[in-house]
Length: 151
Image 1 (tube, rainbow, N blue to C red):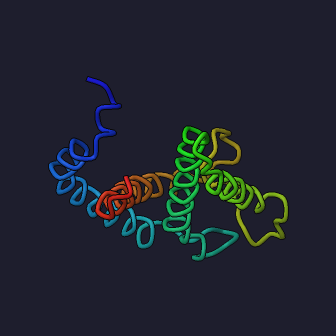
Image 2 (cartoon, rainbow, N blue to C red):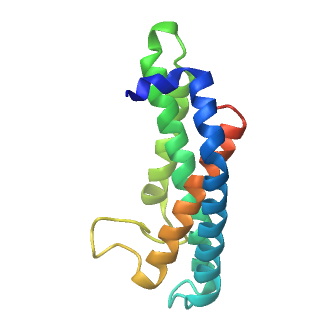
């Protein structure tokens, strides 16, 4: 079985119709647990106070937005022969906006919330509910894209 078999819209839609109910339930559960944990069970940050809790919505949404542009970049590169280069331009701007925070930060934005560097990564108090929110947001966006027949 090959992943390319699902490039056939009928086969992809048949599979997605079977798994979407489970993904919807998983997405709602993950988002409810992650957001409740993040907003009500985590303490305020010593520096940013309770405003730090925006990371439970902001980071998953930003990850999904950047990944959507990255998927379109890959698709555009694959189909470059057909002269579809708009997504490539948009992808450059999406990546630039992600790193613009580091270039022009004036202390209003915290450092990286997710990092492989143990020194920069957000405290575990915020890390685990953030991961749950990201998982819920990934499921939510995937369901939304499938419902709109965009993937």
